[in-house]
Length: 311
Length: 264
Image 1: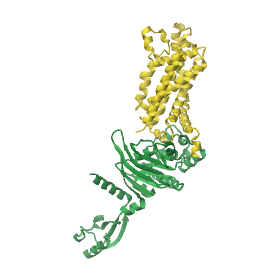
Image 2: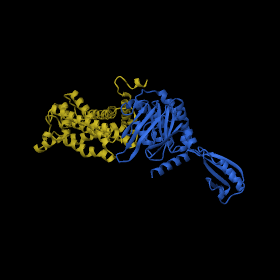
Image 3: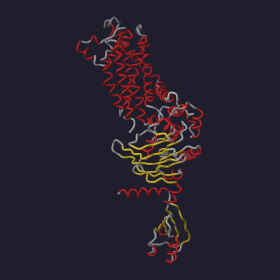
Image 4: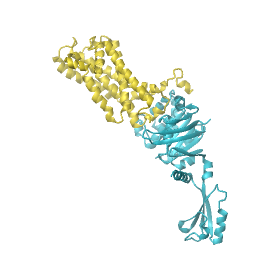
């Protein structure tokens, strides 16, 4: 059974804006799931519905088998949420605000757990500091500590590394992997593709309130990934030879490089044909390399494709 | 383990009520100096102005010396304004700052949220009411005929107006609105509700108008607990306070059922 099941979920705000339409999604237990999408695609709305902050217009969501409306206590107890905005109680201390969160979730005080959480997030030295004295990065850590204070089985990270320095970003990635090691399911939204690429087991792409794709990261890369073959020419070319017009070629580095883009999933990559053609045209090269397109390229391609289909 | 901690027997999330209550009381203690000093100073001022300067020229009201007569009104005045201010700010500020997300995403029922916030706001205003009572004792020899009723009215009024403040805090979508109702409605009603006089001292027409003011019943009932005399019957006072409490409870229930101003 998936830890989160979302069925036919829609949300239309009072303003008439339709943020989600007919979303179906299943999050597997223990995975790291990245929800990718441009701004305004519905990522936060989706998370906020699952967490109980936004009321859905229609559809159902269950968390660990508990309906978020019918059995909201059990559903919410399973979830920790790190919101996108850095919202903290300025006058509270780090220790108090994290302990407060644990209490809200119905758990008895456990100083040992709070201490471990603060230490894991490098917040232990700051435990008696008031939140308003902390930097943005530190506040972000506090929000994570609050979300982990009640030992959730599912952790939502809404844009966790937006405006965060490199050190914290790496700490966060390490933390997320540790959590998965403990069996915690992690769902993160991001528009930094590298984040999804670095961390996620599966990736969902959302656009205009619809999930347009859910795929294993590796499979996604394999399936949609395009490769680029770059040839370093012995003598620069001014223009592409007419004989090679049938190939998807570009000149780069002032004619010094010839770049061939091809589809790895296609039956024929056309590489043999290209090389034969080059040889026939008398174009020589002294080096070559290939590179896999990044998730970023895949993502941009997908979103464009969708936009075109919508027109 | 979690289930046990949640308090499965009652089904109530008491740790959450406690967390909200203590968080809200924390704000009070953080500013304990001004929380306690302000009512002491304002009470002193009222006694100097009304009790000494004016009171010396006013004869006893219903056989109660004027200085003593204004004590219940003074306490009520602070009780109402403090209850509303504390409760409205308590819930408005997290909405304004965005920290409300945590309350909304926690396994808490509306009842528990209200218990935490309203309980804390009522506690604060009762504390302030008692401080004013103690300060009054420095100026006049106190006389409380029905101490249990006095405490009951204190509690009932604090809870009712904290609920009312909670509703204002949910309704307000700006700091101006937060001030609007206390300033334009509650303060005038309190001053015109007989804080510093018995409504029976008014001309017949204004006396009748005053009876439309719900605060009259609160102050009258409270004053009865002190001196055994009242503008209206104690039963009527109790019934009116209960009615207002019921209206506030109904409104809060409606707000949570519809998610008004809390959830989109």
